[in-house]
Amino acid sequence: MKSTPATIESIADEFISAFPPTLTGPRTIGREAEHPLVDGAGGAVDVSELLPRLAAPGDLTPHYDPAYRQLMVGLSGTDYSYALEVGRGTIEINTRPCADLFQVEQCYQAALVRVVEAAAERGWYLLGYGIQPLSIPSPSILTPKQRYEALVERMGDEWYWYGVTASDQAQIDVARPELLTQLNTGLLMAPVIIALCANSPVVGGRLLGYLSAREGHMCSTTPFDQRHGMPISAYDSIEEFIRRLARLDSLLRRDGPLLLPDWQRFDEKLRDGQANFDDFLLHDHYIWHSARLRTAYATIELRPACQQPADESMAVAALCLGLTEAAEDIHAFVVERLGVNYWLRMRAWHRHVIIAGLNTPQPELDFLAEIVEMAEAAVAARGMGEEQFFAPLWRRLERKENPAQIARRVFEKKGMAGLLAHTRIEP
Image 1 (cartoon, rainbow, N blue to C red):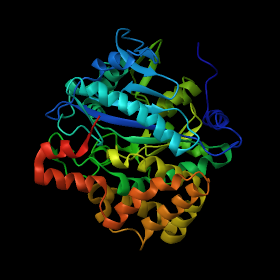
Image 2: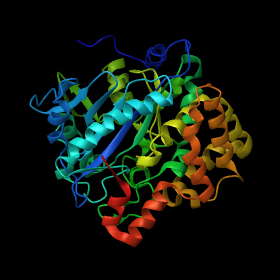
Image 3: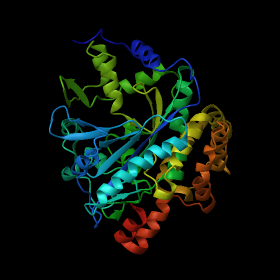
Image 4: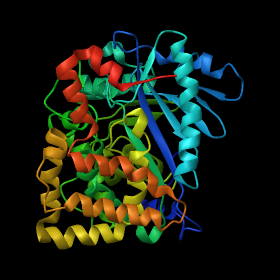
C-alpha cells in the first residue's frame, strides 16, 4: 500500500532529512570502480560466469536478481563487494565507506587482485579503461536483469550504451547544511574531472571523436541527454532541484518485485496524487547527472570519470575527495574568475574537454592548476598524508595529456592489440 501522496515540498523535506545534521568526523569515502573484462582479442566476456569462482572461498554473500532467481548479480563482504553491471562484460567493485584514501586503496586492491586472478584462469583480462573497447552497444552485451529489459523497452537502443561504459565513481559523505553547495559544485566540476580523468576514446574498435566516449555520446547525441552531465543552470534550493527533476519523464515504475516501463512525467504523477517519496527515489536513480546526492548513503556521488590506468588508479578518488572538501572555496573561485556567466562558460568547456581533453583551452589562465591546488590542499589539511595520490594529476597537467589522449595515441600507432596491452591489469 502506498504512503500519503507526496508534494515537491514534502519530498524535499524527506530528502534533506536523509542526511545527517553535521559530520561527526573526517569525511568518509567509498569507491565504485567499474572495469571492462575482455578475452584475448578484446571482446567482452560474461562476468556472471566469474561470480561463482569469486564466491568460492565462502567469505562473500551472494545476491540474486529478484525476478530471475537463478541469476547471481553480486557478492558482498565486509570490505568490498562485486556487482554485475548493465553490460555482461563489466564488473563493479565497491569498497566500504573508508576513513581515508589509504583504506580505499587497500579494500579496492584486495578486491581487484581476486578478480584479476580468477579472470586469468579463463584467459580473460581486466582493463583499466573507461569503456568496452571492441564490443559494440547491442542486445548481446546486456546483462539479463529484469529491470534492464524494461529499460530497453523504455529507452530503445540507447540503453545498450550503458552496457559498455566503465566509470570510476566516488561516494563522499555530506551533511544537511552543505547539500546545495556540494550538489552545485559537484556538477560544476564535471569538466575538471573529465579534463583530467577521461579514458575512453575507442569503442567498437574505432575512434568516435571523443576522448570520453562514455560522456560524449550520452551528453550530446542521445534523446536522453538531459539526464546526463551538467544541467542547464545551478540550483537555488533543494526544492528547486526536486522540482526540476520532477519535470523529466519517469523511466520505470514498481509493480510488486518488478520494475516496468513508464512514460509519464513525474510531476504529472505528483499532480494526480500517484507518487510518494519512494517513487521519487526510483525516478532520481535513473537520472545520471555528473553529481548526485544519494539519500541511501547520505553522500555526494561524483560520476563523470572513466576508469583509470592501473598505475594511477587512485587519481579519481583523490580528486573527488579534494573537490568535496574544498567545495565552498572552489565554487567561490569559479564564480569570481568567470563572472556572472560562470555556469554557461563551464558547460561550454564541458563539451570541449569531452572531445579534446587537456588540449582544450582553459576558461582562464592556470584555471585547472588552481582548482587542483585547492583540492590537494584541502586533502592535505585532513592530516593523513593522502595528498600523495595527487601526483598523477599534476603529471597530467604538466604534459597536457590525460589517460585518454595517451590511449588514443597508442591505438593510432599499435591498433587494438596495443590498446589492450596498454590498458590490461596484470595479475
